[in-house]
Amino acid sequence: MPDWLEEREYCEGLENIKYKKCDNWAFGNVNDCKDNAPAGTVGWQACGIGSSPGGKEPGHTAAACSERTDDFKCAWGQNCFAITGKSKDTKCDPTSFEEDKNICDIYSTGITYSKCSNWANNDPNSCNQSSKKPSDIIGWIPCAIGSDPTTTSCSPYSTEFNCKWGQDCFAVKKYDTSSSGCDPTKYEPLVSEQCDTAGNKLSYQKCVSWKNNDPNSCNQSSKKSSSVTGWITCAVGSDPSTINCSPYSTDFNCKVGQECFAVTSLKTDESCEKSVLVKVQETTENIVKTLAAGGSDIYLYGIIGLIVLFLLLIIF
Image 1 (tube, one colour):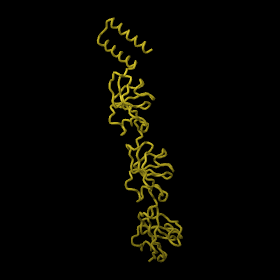
Image 2 (image 1 turned 180 degrees about the vertical axis):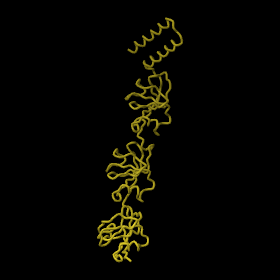
Image 3 (image 1 turned 120 degrees about the vertical axis):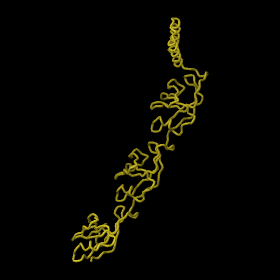
Image 4 (image 1 turned 135 degrees about the vertical axis):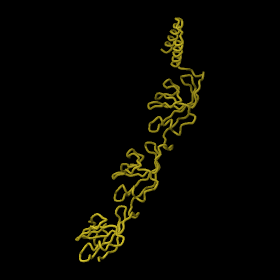
């Protein structure tokens, strides 16, 4: 019967490995170890003479060993070890998660994250496998070394673990694309009771700093006033008091390359003079309606001709 030396242990990755060295085999037969295995043996490991698992055996501090196996693989001319325990152990896990940070990323998304560092065996998978991994993690963001999720040097957020060696790894606890605290959209001070070029008096706010440069954020933002009744779009640099704007619309119609104005009130007001262009448009519409109604005598055509000529003289 062989001698089983003192049980020793070492860390391999996240696991704590326990073993006993089989010594003084009966008649030099290594199978004596297998036939008299210690209680609780879960596997075997063969090492070169002078070596031991993890190099932890006194006098055998090298670590030239074969892979651990469930089956007995020891042979003559080797050191033979019975694996007597194998389990995850926090003392074998150097992985750490830094203090939570709450930030807005470049896409105006609210993120709470914790950086995973001190990977076991320099393996990023330890972030996902570690018993220290917080229970409230919902996803991951890998970034270039020295970067974090506030920068452009990161991969997209993923619910699947996607960290790799040569990156910084961030565990995400909150990912809120609708976070009001990260919404850069702004509304400038209200302009009250201003005349437009169509004979209306209106109040409006200019919408600026669109989220992700998307004008739809004006309509979607929680900062939009509940008093908004419609929208007016204008050429860049213009406002609703000029002729460089589209008509008022109750439907949202702002687009990239325009100024966007949220209208809170609009009513016809006789004190607001209509522009010449609006007058011409209205007159033309009236002429078309008259012709459509069948007024076709020459006198009517003469009057129409004079009106058009008069309007052209005003314009030019």
